[in-house]
Amino acid sequence: MKTIDIYNLDVGTTISSVDKKQQQYATLTLTLAENYKEQILSLSHGTQRTENYVFSSTGIEKEFSYASPNYGKWVVTSTIELGGNGSAIESILAYATMQDEGVWDLCEILTFLTGRRVTTEEETRRYSHKSIGAHACAPHDVLILSGIAMNNRKSLIDKKLCEAFLLYNESLSQDSMVIVAGLVNSAFNVLLDHATDPVSPVPKKKRTDIKSEINKIIDASDLENEQKEAYKALIGSRVDQGTDSLVDKTKRLLLKLDIIQEPIEEDVMTRIKYINTLRNLSTHAGKVPKLKGLDEEQSLRYAGSIVTGVIPEICCMVFGEALGLYSNGSGYSGLFKKNLTTFFREGIWREWTLEVESFDEWFYQ
Image (tube, rainbow, N blue to C red; front, side, top):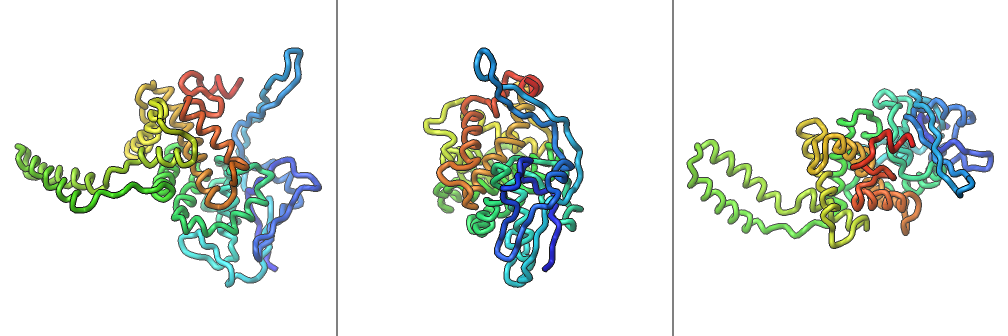
């Protein structure tokens, strides 16, 4: 039997002698390395904050402890044993199917679940070992949920979410906010197109009539001919796009996920629009925009939270549901919903009051 080394798989630091250390996927068998606990010490991580609850004379108090960042390196933390039926089982999430018994798909699933790029030695050249994103589940649930996700992975294709899933995973290998923003925005665009119910399109004849009336106004203006044609093409294209905007789609998705409710309050709508503003200007200008009603520092806080937290957690909810990971708000789904609801309603991200506190004031309490 052929065995492949797997890099960067992190299922937590509290693995004990009674915890599950092996998972079967059809013909594949994944096994944690014998020296797993030692190996994960070499994984990359940023400054880590841990919440601790202590008893005092006044009751239970929350304290924080901090661990310094670690640059880390690629390390082998597990192995996969192939069953020898490479022609029978394919990786189907890749842009072209692969006869590898599903190894590539499994690495993508594990990457999604852990928020850390999990890969084979051959693929380490493509990715960075440094970055870590949102966890789609608790570390101790990774192995069991990866089995469920592998069984349901075709759902990503059926729901036309596969491209968004791969773009999201690609963002986890980046440590530049501008690059991450481009990838998660692209993933979010694809997700919105296929995870929300479309509105009824405006019939083609009505759109043609609208463009005809607009063209009459343009023709009657004193613009140069080239300017007239440019406006006709620009406005005509917008008419053909229909009435459904990214803001509308985002609103419908948040309602579908029960993150917001009707009637939508003005502050909630403003934060939904922040996502669209950030998407447009970060994509076209390559920089963080100043958001309406906020100063530059507040805009940076919102932008960082949206790019590295809000959009990723929305993606995790949608992908997790498609993969059969969450049922009745189980697992991290409930946590994501709580985080997102608080963000859109109150402008608070994981207890960080974005319009009031600096990052240091929030993180180093």
